[in-house]
Image (tube, rainbow over all chains, first blue to last red; front, side):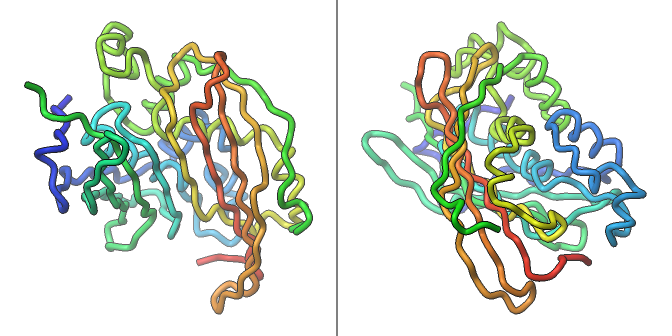
Length: 144
Length: 151
């Protein structure tokens, strides 16, 4: 695991490496359905999804949100998150490639805790926002 | 939706945060972080155990139906999950036994040019661990649209 940034070294505008997920498969949707208990048939049953007017099954918003959260914990450290909000903007489909990005929007200290506010999103290969959101993390001070 | 459901609370339900479930969930979001798999590594980390990934507790909210049934939605194909929020108050670790309580905190109405009249419900779930500590709050926003949303 890479070392998490300290409060002193992170800046407004700091960003992790983009996280690229995909091309996504129906099998990944099914695996997330099993792991998450989200058995809405629009996500795994092609016949049902098409009868409902969809071109095929589509991915769970929380799967895209899970990728974004994974990028944040990889970047800011395990246990750092204080708050996470995910907004579901658009659907995503098999063969889509999602790219997650994040950046620091503010740094502040509250009651002796050093906090950074971040915004993040996952976009598809056409640049459309699939999910977006914001988060707050507590970061340790530099050691020594 | 039934606007009078706003403010209603529901009986708490219990579930176990299992190590195998955490690993399965980490696999499903392709998260290779050893903290979800290696107990010695996790115990040596600042977290002190195998933690729940940040979005894990949402997965325990699909089965209890009391809060969503109280919304009295006529046709779920008009419902979209608009937003999901988590507040992390204390670590949730493998082995914890959580008690979760749902409350419908608000139902509001709004006009949308694209989707007609919207009704927006926020369900808040408060999670307490086996010691009674409040560890996490999840808020899901469900939106009933006036028109069916499709491509």
